[in-house]
Length: 144
Image (cartoon, rainbow, N blue to C red; front, top):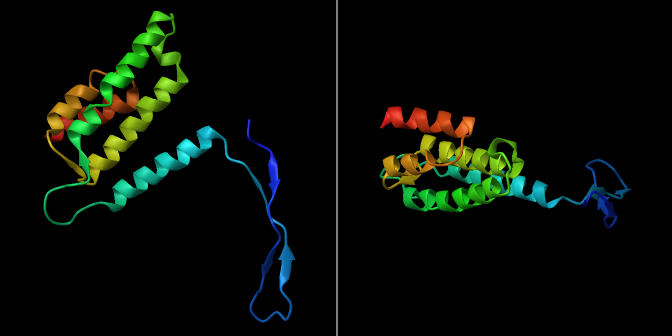
């Protein structure tokens, strides 16, 4: 599952006020695919936070592009239901909904979303039940 230790090349580190470099080998664990996705998601969230504009309209994220994700998630949920799987028990679906919710919240809170936010919230409201997503939708519907 990608948890092997890899031996990296030896690094020489020179500390101030030391005559000789310190030799140290560094070992690290390979990241799993899931861990890489988590890092990617965190990078996106940090970029959205950094993208806050102090003047002018938002230009980072089109609300229509975010809303376009909903049919993909709905199709996945429909496939789960056809297989007899409860949506609230599918961790992949719930992780997906959490990440969509986190991304939308950060983008909206930082003023990065342009376009029809009401349509975005309406589209997100059609997604399967997810507590975080419901809180975000309710909060932003009240502020429009």
